[in-house]
Length: 149
Figure 1 (spheres, rainbow, N blue to C red):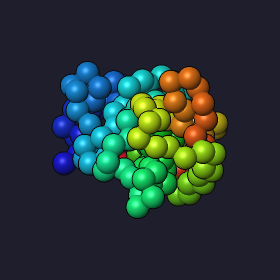
Figure 2 (cartoon, helix red, strand yellow; figure 1 turned 30 degrees about the vertical axis):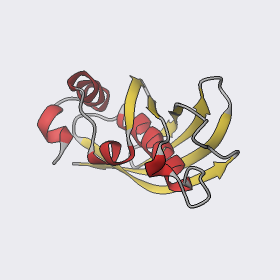
Figure 3 (cartoon, rainbow, N blue to C red; figure 1 turned 30 degrees about the horizontal axis):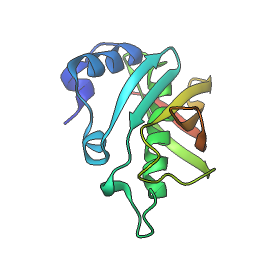
């Protein structure tokens, strides 16, 4: 079940993420919520998805958990891209600010994450959820634990 073991063993974090994209693979959460890793750079990761009926709350708007999952993924994978082959991470804290609602008419959105700083044990990242025109729907900051495998 570990994509790192299957596709990225021995590779640094950025190379692992690039291998996942090249193989057309996404983790189970990407399948369940229908979003993809679409860009990786040094300390940068971008996910994209289009909200569908599986994301709606009872009021017909996209559930905040969908926003948060994309933003958490963008922050986490931005940090992942900066790790060595013998490091891993986990989210310690995620703070999400919702700026405007997403609806069925919102279209495809991007969660753009970047590392703010990274140390031996802790990393800080931020992400923005935007539409094709750059309209901001949500933002997040994240604190992540960096550990040896």
